Length: 133
Image 1 (tube, rainbow, N blue to C red):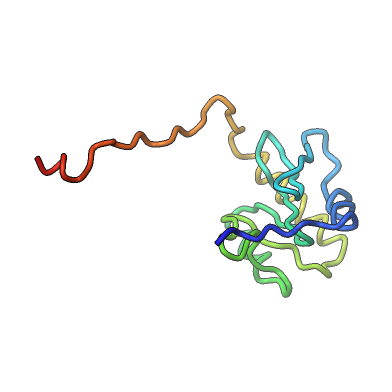
Image 2: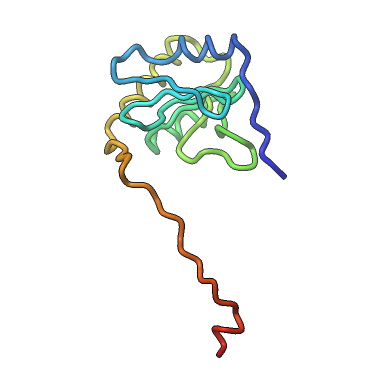
């Protein structure tokens, strides 16, 4: 059964864009019909339907997840590890503090190296009968 990917409204997109920290290192890009905010090639903030998720340090992730209205981020079948959803009715000054934490956390991680791509494992074309021989 395929994953259901909700599409954001124009209001959701505008709200997300307004929440992204104003920082020259940040780039906003479309992702699967939603949006992501990136620093050093890594996403620190994402939009999934109407939900805004942040990638945080383990300590901050635990703290945000404990806030009423927060929860996992991404598809319910496969939420994104290291991310938590901002509560929808969180005060603007709190949202600003959380988005800044996410930006600084991801900016402190090693930059993504576009030249290192994971290669699919080579699979043997031999059948199990051939291995037994």
